[in-house]
Length: 325
Image (cartoon, rainbow, N blue to C red; front, side):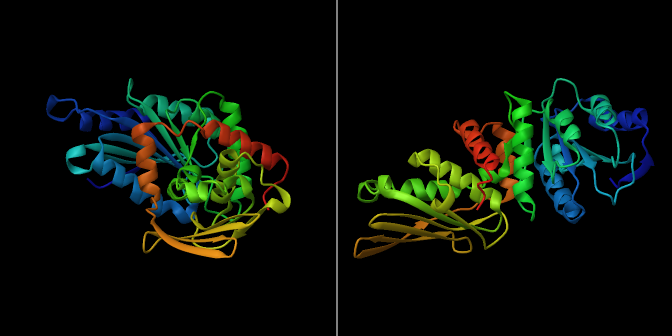
């Protein structure tokens, strides 16, 4: 069904959605209320494509909140049915300069009661912190992505502050989920006792990544695993490679050095280990996850690894000390 544009009339939108959901007198099951916010104009089409991908797979009521300057304030576009058998519904709102309480009132009127509410927040929270807090408080889970722009360190710092303010239910950061394939390669490689015995010697790391958020999370994870802080001269970051990807990681210490090169096109991690005068080369499977797969994993499980809160605390401590280089 083609979308129809209109000035916001909540009663009419609700009637249209309810009729679509209960067509032929039979109410369709809905998996979740999926609230999607975007305030980056260049990602508008990218977000819309992925939202429709979710709608095509899962019966969902999707409310897409457009916070870009390209959208008109307080306008709506309704797409009552999409996705074939999934029978999802999409409502698009322009919410430029809308008060957080106004947006919350719209959601309260249009979300399906007794169905989980999930938030996927795209873009920076800087300048719209109150809106983020208003939406995230009701979400199980709230999903963010602190990575992907030249200001990702500032985005990450802002996200950490908001996560602390939300308390017991910190949002899930896709930037942290994105390093999972790298974690698996490193953990698998050092399962070998030949290399595991050198881990206590590691005293310096280097991380090349297209965005710094993933590098900062990986530094925190390595520090937790190796019981080191990796600050100052013990760490080197370089912004290299594909955005939102870790390209290279080096772990070095007295008499040992391990270089991991992550080759996404070949799904292979190339490892060079220099142990004393000997050098060993190896290749390991490396399966990166695209953003939509990460979002779906977060949607379906609502969980993250048990060390996530601890990693957030480490990152918060390092950012407070200005340890980003």
